[in-house]
Amino acid sequence: MNRGLVFLDKMVDKEACVSVGAYNTPDIGTAVYDTKIRDSIAAGCPYVGFAVPSYPCDDTDNDKFKNNVAHSVDGCGAHIYPDPGDGKSGKCIEGSHFAAYKNQ
Image (tube, rainbow, N blue to C red):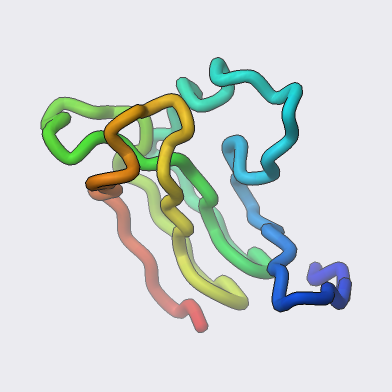
């Protein structure tokens, strides 16, 4: 359920059914970005189904975020953001092996 928060400066409340490190705090550490989410379904989420870090564009065997589905989300299926633990994420990021339907 949407928390109904209103933010200044066009900030977004990163509400998600599944969120891996999307709420940036100084003490979070980089280990959280190694979390793996596979074969999962997120449904009825208020902003995004999955908020997850990217993986390098040249990493063809990556399985951190794979075979997941988001549906009926009051927003988008996935928010893939640059992985803070990957020094190359400023140039190219990737997120794949994911499906979404019935999202706004």
